[in-house]
Image (tube, rainbow, N blue to C red; front, side):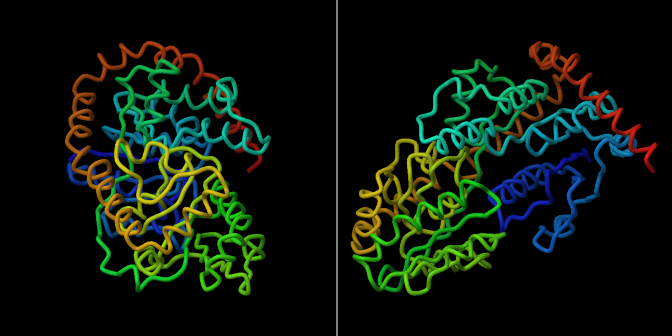
Length: 406
């Protein structure tokens, strides 16, 4: 049996974040290939963390800047190590290379953080994003991490094309692997549904900004649909979120959704005026698979529908957003057509079976031709040699300092 180690930023919470669902989908791909998985993280397990024991996945806490990790990774001796986002590769990549040099290193980007960071800055400065905005500090760190790894998993076709065409990253070290969707057709009819809904983990800044956008435009929807409410769901809602709750205005903060499918089956329309972000949006993919039409922004729908018609409407204009939301809420024919569009997108673009075989083939090829693969990635070899030396010795210095303070 082959060993896989995943170094996670946090323990996966599939009911809180799309990243948590993504991690479980990755695990399932490797479990189907009979890998023994060990999940390591510097974070603590919370009450919302997925029960890894239920999948026979071993797990353990690890410590930053500590040679205990060296002994552990050497003992496990994995064939593959997956880094959950580039920051974990920065922290532990050099140790993996030093202790288990023949392990294939895979970076799961989740989304391109430098793209999200640049878009957030442009949004807050009320300007259009330019190419130079992308070349930020996060860009340099994230691209370096991509180059140091044997393979990076990219969740969005837009981001895949950006890396290949705009930044000339060799396609051989990239693999497009989106979130997967399994269609669960809803039996709840249009006439049985009530209200609008929005959902998103509040630790994620784009989700908080989306709620602020909704607060701004909701009064215009409420004027024309006085009986309607919007229910805002999301994990880790803070006091500032609950301060937006206004029962009389029909703007209802619900907090964590215990069951997304049930929540979506009760609602009539999902609203997601996402102002910035990256990757593909878990909430919109779930709206497709559960049959809930939506109105979103161009950023929200980015790289999510190919040549298919969207399951609702896409607009960045506030007035048009309100109009489309009301139309979708009132017109059953448009609503039903939008629902079917969502099922078609999920089936044709996000079904696991579309990617599983090619992914396994790619992994197995790298395992069998690792030296050849690495030699072709000469920039990665250079970065591995030079950049990680500074990371290594900084970590060693912190480790030594910590030992003296104990």
